[in-house]
Amino acid sequence: MAMAVMRDEAAAKVFELSTGVHASAVVRAAVQLGLADAVDGEPVTLEELASAVGARRDTLERFMRLLTAYGIFAEAEGRYEHTPLSRALRSDAPGGPAGIIRLGGDWNWILWGLLAHSVRTGESAFQAHYGQDIFAYFDQNRQAGEAFQHGLSVVAQREDPLVAEALQVKDGECVVELAGGKGNLLRAVLERHPGVTGVLVETEQALDTVDPALREGPLAPRFRAFPGDCQTAVPGGGDVYLIKQTLHMWDDETCLRVLENCRRAAPPGARVVVVEQLLASGSAERRARLMDLHMLLVAGGKERTEKEFAELFDRAGLGFGGVRGQAGDLRLIEAVTPEA
Image (cartoon, rainbow, N blue to C red; front, top):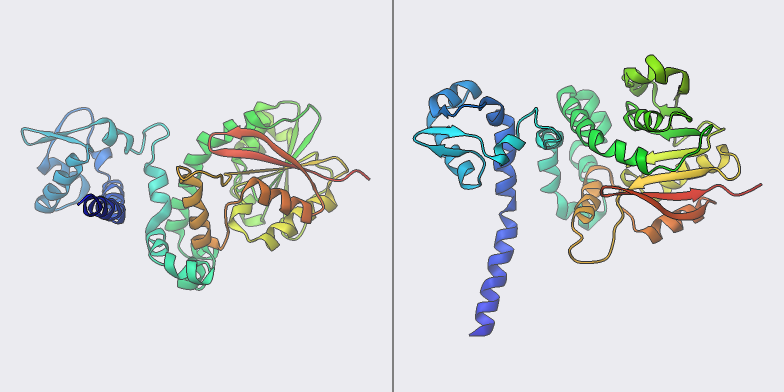
């Protein structure tokens, strides 16, 4: 009898895990409909809510019934009002998840449905399904690309000041950020460390959208843009080469090309600081493991352990300097170019 109960509990747990996609779909639909933005300080009727979001009254009523069961909105006397969870879904919620939820788009749902394929083959599900990489896809699907970039900026607003705080630099040093997008992290570094200069390495297309604060105002004299692909070449003369959440998108051989470019361009004793999540032991460590598979699906990349980074640096001819800082879930993993 005890074994039967145990099996039933195990089956119930596995079934609960299998239906997690339903809860995700509910939250995502609430964001897509803009329900949280449609409810302000005063409770609203179902008719008012349906009109505001452009939904049928009857199906919206069914949807709101489920949302309130999750604690997203509360209903009393036919009117709906905010709860802490629904307020967190507003577009103007400080650090709220709505922008990050929109980041994934339809393509994200498709990719996770192809997880078994990627596990079998080691192939990026995005490449297999769309026949191109994610950035080429965004070039052709601007709305998806804009949602992706907005979601990244929401994350960056929270992470970048923490990374800039944790980064150890000295006055007079030059920080070269590789594949830094609009330069949000480099801006945070220059603001936090007024004695350093910065170089942003990005494609010419990306540099067209660089943060205006880097080109104008007090930061401009300490900023320089370097158009190019870090897989091909990086500028010399940097004291710190900063790479945030980029290597996890690539396989080891691609990462090696970038790190070797840093070694060749950097002066002796310069540092390469990689900012990534670290895979760690322990069954409770789920977030990095989920991201590890997400990188496989999206780009054929992966998250790495500290040991794997040490091995990667060694293969690139760099000395492993260890983990030198923490910024939320991220770690600052350091390598040093060899002395002449």
